[in-house]
Length: 188
Image (cartoon, rainbow, N blue to C red; front, side):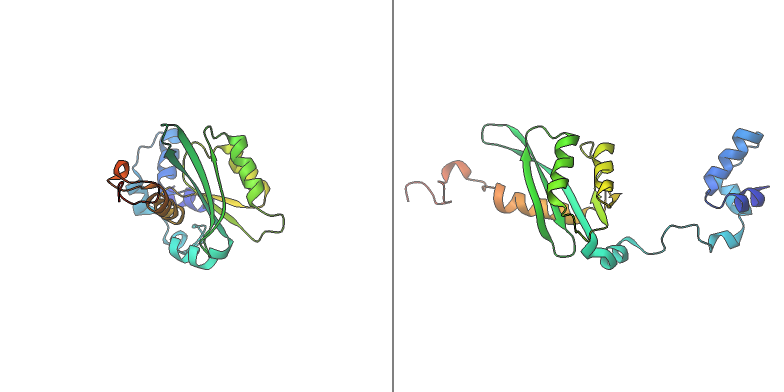
C-alpha cells in the first residue's frame, strides 16, 4: 500500500504518506516505517525541485539575484529608524537604500518599484522571514517578474553588508563622548 501511494503521489514525502495512512485508513505507522517500504526508483526520480546546493545556485545565478534586508538604527535622540538596503549579489552593488520610522507593506513595495528598472535582468529576490516582508510585498515583487526566496539563513550577502555599514558608518567607537565630530580627542 505504501508503494502504491508513493507511486501515485510522487510529490508526497514519507511523512505525508504516514499521515495519510493514519488519517484516512487508521493505520498508524511512522515515517521511518514508510521509508523502509519506500520504492527506491522514486528516490532517484525528479522529486527534488533542484539538485544543486545553495552555493552552486548562487554562483550560477549571482548576476540575477537581489538581496534585501532591514537594519534597525537608533538615533542620537533615541528614535528608532528602519533602513532598507537592496543589493545586487553578483556585483555587491547597493541598488537602493532608504530610511523610515514606520515601515509598512505599501512603503516597502514602493521602494522596490523605485529600485527595480523596467528592463531589469533580475530573476530572484532574497529576503529573510521578517514580518515587514509581508505577502503584499512578495506579491508586488512577483509582479515585477521576480521569484521571492525567503532564506532566513542564506541572506548572508545583505547581512554582511549591513554589518559593514554598522561598523564603518554607525559605530563611533568606545570613547564616543570624548571625541569631536572628526574623531579627534577634545582639546587636542
